Length: 304
Length: 276
Image (cartoon, rainbow over the protein chains, first blue to last red):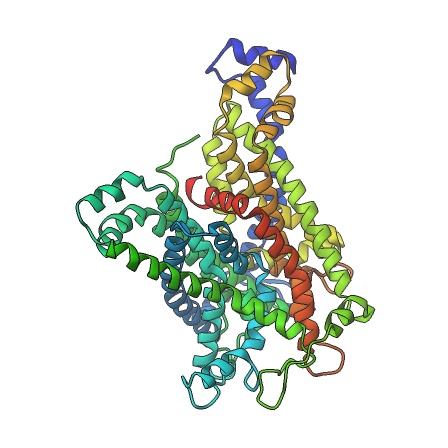
């Protein structure tokens, strides 16, 4: 090993065999783990999606039949529609709220550290556990939501949150927005902190008011960060599962079943072929989005 | 100066809104866990303080709450530890050694971190069944490490690349091996970053749901999020008091961790998502 070090210093900037050899050794554990427990399962899912693979039946190669079936499957279409609608409603809400929270977290207020920690809490708590609390909040006869709504006179009757399709949709969106807004806030905060103070001061000297500063100076400067957050949240929203599994179980009548949850139901009933086909569709969509994300978010920062 | 006043008022209102928004479900959770009845918001019912819910979850063996908690803590701590070790090795190679294709490795890791979990969990279930690892802690541990590694790698690369190379070059000249320059120079210097990665990996493993749902069947390996999600009680009616008490016991350590290490967590998350 000692020779290796000398070698490296004698020939700076050269690719040496020993360097490559030890680099391989250093990255081997990472590659092995990701290969075995992520890549192999993903490839396996792709292959499984070409089979009729139901528990206790013989496995049969049917090529694209599962995918053909997908196109005419109303359940899948419903799941697709719900997932898209879910993203369209929850992601913009998260971005707006997250930006507001980030502005507050960046403001010069007493106990700023405590405020930041409190904002982090919804993100840090396991989604399945907070979803269980939301389930109780949405309880028809004694939940917090109906208590507030009837006391404040927003609705005269209690709302059937989890039993109606609109109620369940709103319930899922609210729980998800609560859970993920902190993440957006943290990302946007990073963007805000990178704005040089002189620019804001200059705008003040030029007698711009608060709104003008925000929309004409701050927003353009944090736009890249917001795009990153937007893409990240969209990819994350595509695979939404925990909240739905706990809160609505996909109900009422499959109205809030996301694509992940739809595939999961097939896995649960032992139909691995069809479940895999559903997962592959989601995978392809998420993967194409993440390629965009990589292009937008990182290629500019050629740090290493 | 009028503008300053307006700004102050807006910030004050915003703070109240923000804190209420973030904390009210958590406060409600605590309130229900300390109440004799979960329906204390109904008009005829009053709030009566009790610790029975906590006593029940902590002492009633048949609820298996402590088993779930133990599984979660063991798996999450081990995942976080191995993530830090494996990711440090790779981050060292990427930032300090010369080898072709390191950018590809990084972007490959980034792409992997965006895979939807449902795209692997079906096959993973079959794979683990073949290995006989269903419902074991190692059956969760390995997928967890692999799942969290890409993010850990990104964050660590970001921290490591900020350490001046002269530091470890000096160590190499003094006769250190690569391994020694990583463990004796880089890791101590990047300790805050390593701590961030450890905390984030722990939180991710602790919060993970889908793998645990598919790959465990009972209290021998089931983790606490799944345990609480599937908690139905023994007598039909949903035992909200017990569920909320269990939730409080589980989230309290996470909340304290967040309060104490807020700065480290935010710094890690930011590097993972934006700066790269």
